[in-house]
Length: 92
Length: 504
Image (cartoon, rainbow over the protein chains, first blue to last red):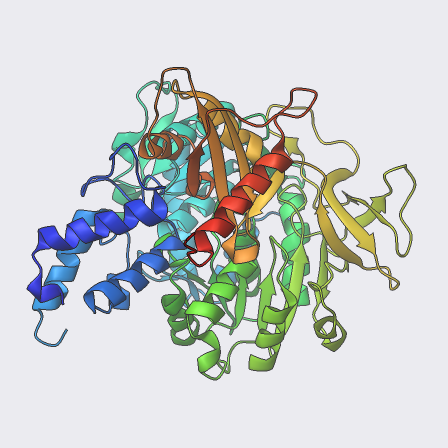
């Protein structure tokens, strides 16, 4: 559950998933939590849906539709902070 | 017979009717008309004259529509760039077409490269439209049908984007056909899914304007969010939808489109840009009574053939035909050995008529019919089935991509000795893969190459996957063996998805 994890731990898992699935393992270790995911085409229109599916399975968090936008999915840091905020809301 | 008279006439008929709804708010025809006049006056004051080109660099918004209308009213041509277009690429377009001005959103103005000459005027579109302006005199430059209305930059095989020049006459031949075929009325609500840089958007905007109907803009970051698109269709009471098949497949597969009854208002679903696997069309047909129309045409001709899907198409085991000529065009196929293809034969499709572009900016004007590079088969009733391409242009989610352009961008990176681009998978699952041989002693990273691509290419041309190989396979003649590479990539994919097997 997200609320049991710190934002750093959430980031680590997201980084690992993105490296594995979208960056051929990122052998140079270039991906950071501030890397612009959409701007550099690491996330695109289609694999964003795959990432959202992963978030649901891994953290048990449904990403609300209105949160799927260019600002929230800008980087791993912005996604983690959105997930941790969502977990902190009483009805999330 | 100008492209801009459509809004002017609709505004005169019913200024209170809704023209545009989307990011940045709603615009009624009267407001759109007034704002376009005000911006036209501003641009004229900054030196924009008839025959000039003006780049519009902003997200999909009511402001972008105002800017397009303003430029047209001056007798100038607009050149759309999306907010996601890299600054370098936008500047290359501006230089290529000798733009007189760049109208950009406030957040993009500071990103306009300093090395563009000062003679290229910079206009902050956000700031201009936020301020109050006195009523301006109506701007309505009288154009001839051959004068340019807009330039759309498409992927070029040699690595440089090509500016497809569309005249007022070209655009109106298509728009008037579309509005008549759809019998569009002021009650219609057109969805605008495609970016303004993509010619599908011309139907959404101008068929709506021709009828005095509303166009409902879908912002770029929603364009492939399946559930939100489905919500959009219902909430916006869309009556005419037009998109690439990929978007519709995504909505059916991941957005739950078919789970709810089709909205009563939906009366036409149009698709173009890539083959639509027939089973998805069957699903759509079971779900809605709306007309289903398959439109065909490269940017250079806009829509030149179309076909309305009927029961006989659903019974076939292949995508619906691209149909017969429309928009006043003639289209025929030439067999590989010459001669016009007859029933049952294949050939390259040629198009002649009022929608055929004036030419590519800076090159010789188009003379005579346009050869599409698309191979078609002639059906017994004289309509056409799409067969494939005769070159290295591919479609990724409906966007055309010249593999050579992707390769030349990667080849320009210091750490890359040679790069090959190819696609794997089909339909919605098509991925753009590049295989890179690093320069001797260099070790480029995936991310460094993604960033390099993102700074030079539109988003849809950034490789989905970058792989490395010490050496690229070659044919006996020393050319890169594309077939062998594609087979390698497909084999790796199969291995990655196969269940794990352990050797004893």
